[in-house]
Image (cartoon, rainbow, N blue to C red; front, side, top):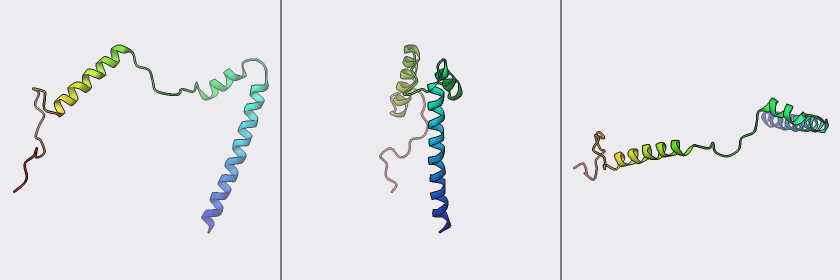
Length: 91
């Protein structure tokens, strides 16, 4: 089938591109000076993990979620709308 051949060719092209990128990265890294800074400027600084949150913002989010769950569980004085058949069977 033609589709399998196309997939095989794309994988081969992907491998060639990855090898070319790796060799270019080695070339840039081997030059003295600020080559690493140039790569960082090209791709942007890599961020890993979660974004940090200041304590004040964390408290705001915590309170907002406490209010949300209290309202969902019916412990709030705020109106929460119609409930969906809370234990009542349609007979």
